[in-house]
Amino acid sequence: MTTSTTAARAAVLRTPYQESVARYWNTNQQDPVNLRLGEIDGLYHHHYGVGAYDPSVLTGPEETRDRRVLEELHRLETAQADLLLDQLGTVGPQDRLLDAGSGRGGTSFMAEQRFGCHVDGVSISEYQVGFANAQAEQRGVADRVRFHFRNMLDTGFATGSRRAVWTNETTMYVDLYELFEEFSRVLEHGGRYVCVTGCSNDVSGLRSKAVSRIDEHYTCNIHPRSAYFRALAENGLVPLHVVDLTPATLPYWELRARCPVATGIEDAFLTAYKEGSFHYLMIVADRV
Image (cartoon, rainbow, N blue to C red; front, side, top):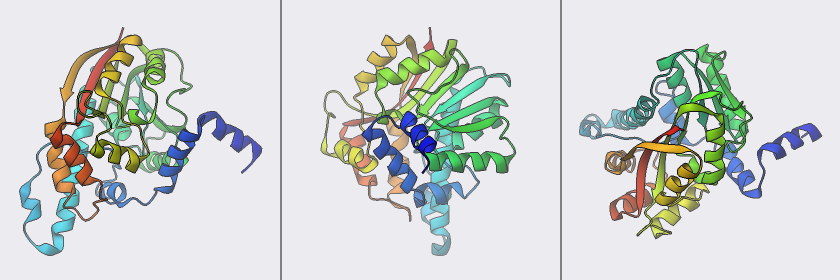
């Protein structure tokens, strides 16, 4: 690694914790949960799903059961991304959006396809950035969808340059006050921020055994629900809608627990959601 490359990485990965998170995603390249589902239609997601699943996928010919289950999981994950994009409001071809913690790029490509706009994604995983940019080239949208090896706490984009920003299950890796300060900076006045996240229940979920197991598995630091609203308020981001998606995501986890690419973390999610120590929220806020 050259001196300039080392310096560039140090500018993005500012703490040992961030280095460990980047290492986790850089070395977790062949995770079948993401890859096998993405291979179905070329949209690679790094988030979970919402909605009831079709129980017929669990019946029928045994030789095609695994394929049916994976297709159904992918449908639910895509439905979650569609739900997020539904909240962005009016977006035109001239607008620029930010996907903060963009993974392999699935939601960014869906946003460009829906709105015809420009989308920038940022990730601290060099592997994810390379994968997503290769996907943009293959899709013929590299002039409108680009991914950058950058820290979402310091994106480098111009002040007021974004019509909308979203985070999809990525806020648990960063300090919320720093994050929302950066989003408030890059959003135009009246711009929209949408957050989908798992968060602990302030009353009963702070470091429950199941929540701690999720933290350990993903090398993350799940925030309590109240922390989101304090950090939003401090940075001029006013919630318009708060939706508890917990009931809507339970079927996804029940199906995933029975799929061929289950990772073993499914029981922790199901336990945390059912005992009420963990919530799956969508927060829609405007920059004022």
